[in-house]
Image (cartoon, rainbow, N blue to C red; front, side, top):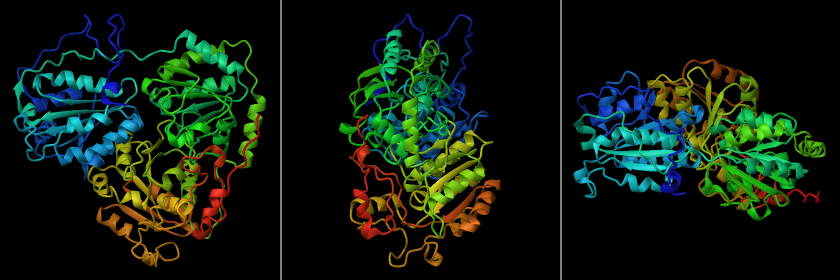
Length: 633
């Protein structure tokens, strides 16, 4: 998906009003234009006009004029991260938890390059974000000037659109367009690169300038024929499953999907991006599926004869071996992004449409069905699959705390009423396995790009956007150290986020693959100082580094817990704190995330349990512990 493909569609249809365009009507009063303003002040005013209340920004020479302009704004709060990547992930968390556009800003050169990972992350997870970058004077562009990089060119593959602003007078139009593009269709990031002379130019701006986006059309709608075809395929099915992705949440269609699935009694399995779009504990539903998803979810999709994919893209962590994915199913794919259709999986019926609008029509059609299809035998089969390997997942009883224990206890004590971010690693998968997410926008993690260091800055963004909510970042010690400096931001900006750090002294997910796929050979996955003297629950003195001392240096409240009996009280204390709080939970290092479908394998080869997981030399046995092939149904 290139930038042009994501940013524009076909020719405009002047007979249709674009809901993403701000159309000027006769009833609108043209505002009096100010005599003159600096370009930087124009940028701030335009952001105010878009309803922006927070910008996550790190200053530098090429963006200093913009920062100076923000000091004159009474509407926008500027939060200073301690690294540009941190600021980008804060904007990501802000956007994911609200659906609003997250805004971040950096200087040129290394500042902009430090933001690239977060832009790519937003692109992969379809997050509406506007990234403003300062740029050197236009006269220096292309001359290898100090801190000059081609931000426009470098970001083209990972954005919906990039702008290099050459005329200051274009700023009002461009900023309007950037927000339209970021929010419209499939959401995503937009970059606005602003040279220093454009920021400094004094001119009379036209804030009424119309967006010029002839390539953007209203979102495609499912036709009457499309709806009729889908309903016909449902009537003909005996084992249907709805496969719901992040598009359900971004389109605000969660309630519609829930009602539609209940009326027709069709089970729903979500992706990690779709967590919370339906009630996961409803008996017919399957929670989430994929590489580490529920056994019942994976097997139900494998056995289905109709798979209805809504707002999703058939990621490899969902499909495994594509040739064996849902082998008996006819597949319907409904998604707003045409470029995703038939890209990873060839489907039987494809509908390019916005999920919310399509579900409104499907819901109406379902309600008008004179005779509802009978899927009772299929629901009974799903019950059997759930009994084989129940959810929530069983946890092995061990003397010391496991990461799974800690997450399950957090869920129990919080009653599932908190917003959760995570870093990337084993803890990221254990979190939805042991914490039941029942609401949309409750679980926020780097899922497409899988970027370590995401959790803490994202939690800050989530908390800023949701000041009354309790926000907990569930972290691994490897991921946490990648953006640990943002502890300073939380204190300086008075953002009382919590981090539950699951410290196993390893890069756990890579270690698991070493155990299960590479014979247990350790290739730079040990984080403890001495591999022969590993820190852990039985060897506290060898734990490195001392996170409570680090927390103290950043003025965070903190505690370390390693005894099971102390865990509940420690979590309660963390949740009750009104300040930034780090709870370090020292956990066993030799646990594996199961179920596990090895990369490139099919659902038939799912590893659901392995009694030898803590024993590295015998862990290769796990590869042979596959589920027997299900009989044809």
